[in-house]
Image 1: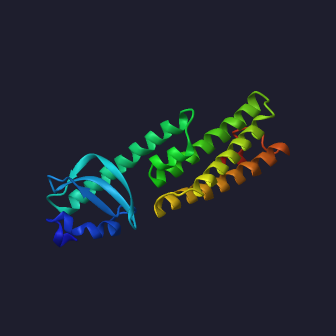
Image 2: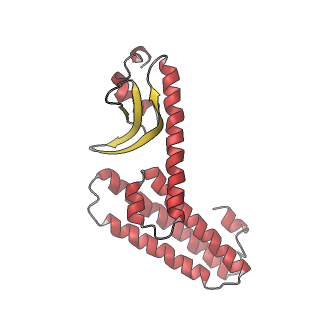
Image 3: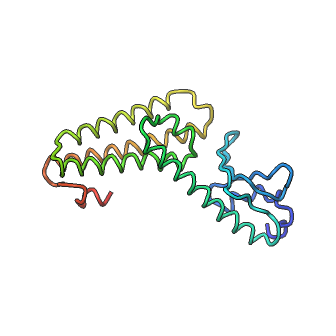
Length: 202
């Protein structure tokens, strides 16, 4: 890799050895030294993330690889911020959210929804003495799971999309089970509010 640093396109096959989830990069069509996107590739399917600032693949290879890593982190951070704004908005459809985001960000999104709804349910139960909120929240989690399962039963066009949605189902089943476990402890009087260790340890 070091010996081929002057010709960055020759190390395309090596990116997946260097980075955990970058299989390839996309160079600018006119300036072949300018990296503008990072790609995750599985078979013929790919996920792509545009870099906030293109990285110039010139000079010492160690330097531009470090610059690529920094831009990759900035790009994924930007995607996470966008996703958190999407899940906070009303009317977010899980299918659209999943299709519009890379896998790790889609996963983060359903975890944000679960954490926020769970935390709010425990807080409302304690402060407002709302006995029905835990049941309503459980119903929402069951509906989310049913929606994710239904999406998996459709034609998802690629193995990568299928794997993404199947992973969302797997993680959400675990989240739903954890919620029900804590809800049982709420019913038994072992969990009082959102500051209880049984919730905080999750």
